[in-house]
Image (tube, rainbow, N blue to C red; front, side, top):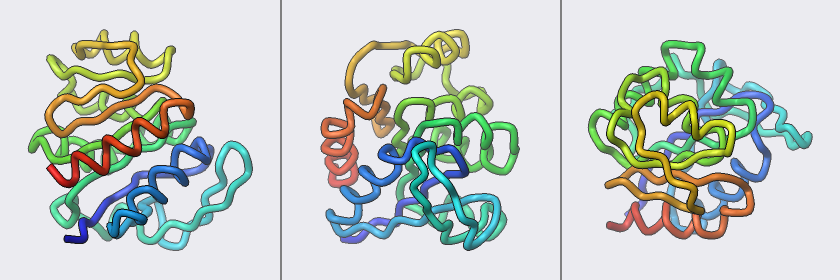
Length: 170
């Protein structure tokens, strides 16, 4: 059964942390929707890859999606300053809906106030921040806490992609 996957993203996303999980999710038969500040917004990754948003944050509701992906890079730090994106993420954390974040992606969790007691990982410099926000932090390639799947770096993408697809089928 096709699942609808939301991806919150803007400029300076880590290119492969968007393209690789997106490809894995689509190969599994899922519908992936890139959500940014505006519909048809050109998004430029850190390495120069161009992506086009499918829709704007104002045109979607988290209830319309089965899962959420947050790729890393500098994108999550920009998005967490906007309460619309924080609210979207809060829905998935609060309802324990499938939520996948890699590298700097978990920065978006900090603003939600919903990290306390959740087990996760992130990029080296983000791990202390999520720890201060109450998360139980691990330094592992992939950490699964119910339907929350987190990972550290592009090197972890094969394990991350395998796990996010598995969680969708669980």
